[in-house]
Image (cartoon, rainbow, N blue to C red; front, side, top):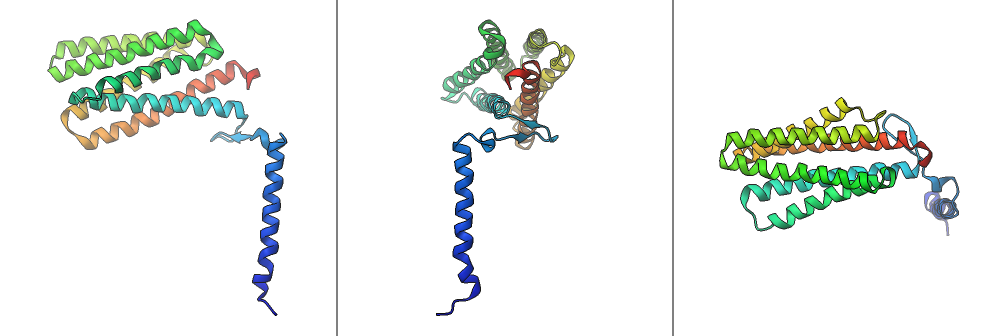
Length: 226
């Protein structure tokens, strides 16, 4: 029986594709070159699997940070019944961020970063409460506390990695984070939902930039571990 040429060639092509895939998987399992999974940053720089994992983990933690911050803002501004659970999860994120640096800077440093970040969250909660009450003096006081806390975090990061995490750069990065979070809170309190969504989009991108800045600093300081 004569079959069309295209149909006759299909099993051969499929067999080749399966064989190629099998060879690739075998190479990965065997720990060959593909197992290293060399990846590239946007600039074209190749990175190892360990560096990729660090960068992805750090991005996940900072995305958790701004996601749970947003959910906490919604809960705190509406007296939602999930407020306690949501704020609790947000505070856990600060512990997770502190734990993430312990393999590089030690237990004490990780615990200190957690302390500073938890203070960052608790001040934000006080700021929201003051804003809801319309107490402008309290709002100004909490904003001053918030910036002082950002200064402390910037100083902490600079002390841990003075070459990559310059104090002024860390300070500006954290101030931008505060400003964007403030815009998010104000938009929600005013019921300006378009501005609220736009503020979150901006803070999401900025959080990823912060995560990458921190990951890059760690990789540069501990190059032999990546």
